[in-house]
Image 1 (cartoon, chains in turn purple, red):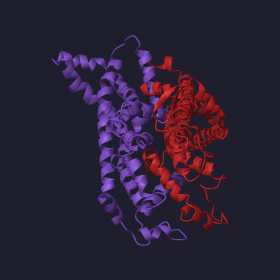
Image 2 (image 1 turned 45 degrees about the horizontal axis):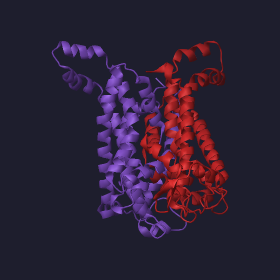
Image 3 (image 1 turned 135 degrees about the vertical axis):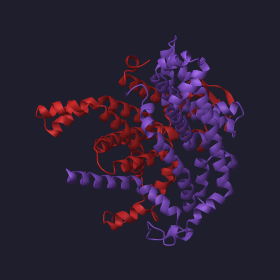
Image 4 (image 1 turned 45 degrees about the vertical axis):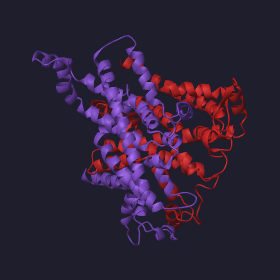
Length: 272
Length: 270
């Protein structure tokens, strides 16, 4: 049995390496000096390691602007998502009302829609509202497309909290709002954290809407901005990948924290 | 919902090259769309792209999920590694693969030549014969994590005593897999397939980035073709792009309906 487990561990390590290999190429390229990018034959590891690439990127005014935009867009749209989703989720979890099934079905359908198929319509909408190149447009779009996931996710959490606990709080002299804030919110905290992290990452990684709506270089988020490190005229692959590593690492850590709740939320209404 | 309304309205209108609305033209945009020379190739590309990515992903994920369902030291590490392609921004992963596939400086050609798999380097993203395969490989790579996690959740919901009973009845491991695991995994498989079809059909960054250098629409899917018509090509034709956009939305909607049927939504919840 131990031999079999050792074999499985070996296979697991190989598998992990295969999954991470491309990102190791990213990391090592990010650590290469400019001159080594065009060495032939190509090498995996840098000859002269240059961690300074990361400092250069961090000091780059362009990168700082894109980072600010990404943080702003992601933070505000995440806030909107949670503020709008939490009451809707709580209400549908606690009350039965006419059209509740239809409402949840509609939410589910919007969750499946990516903004990509609608991007031409989105562009027309914001063009006619004269909101092209504004943060408002990007924040609203991201919030709208992440709302459905948050509603489903939170609904499941609220529904799992027994009504009796709220009633017990009422007996102990808590008013409804007090029970909500002191009992329900703490108990559903994992759900709220998951919704927040998921909405934040989805906005952080969003590309096609930002590419379409934001044409002003200073107002682009990271995903769109960093592509200007490698164009037909300049090829700073090391800078591109240093910026990518900086953008990816925090997101992977956040993602790992909520991974066990994500699958249930993304396959909403199906697997239990 | 409002962008959808705008999309339908735009698909029925005519626009100047600067985007000014010039009045309704009825269904003419749809007729023009059907006459586009590139359309048959684009539709065929889309079919190949979706079927190949979803099919290969499901097969590989079945194996991966089975593997991760076992208990062994280091399993947590594999699970963490699986998160990376899922969490990383698709555009950054796509750029990364452009670099890995690079004809002169890419590590892939070098590695394959060192291993004597290739005699001479391949222009993965510039050669008409390899570009679709190269894109599909990246599509599978980024679709694996989510799919594997869904199937893993499905596997873990199968009670252990079912396996016990099958073993008592004297079923061989492969027989157990075919007669017990696969049928019980069916709901999870359907969910994974339907959601992947939706995601992969709507996928933009991979095809957009890896096919960047190639002129024309020879390797575009319906999504990137629509984008090029609207914003990039000499056409800059909002009406035409919107007509294709409506078609794309209808395709997605059809997939969503299949999904809802697959999970028998009404009975299950609410």
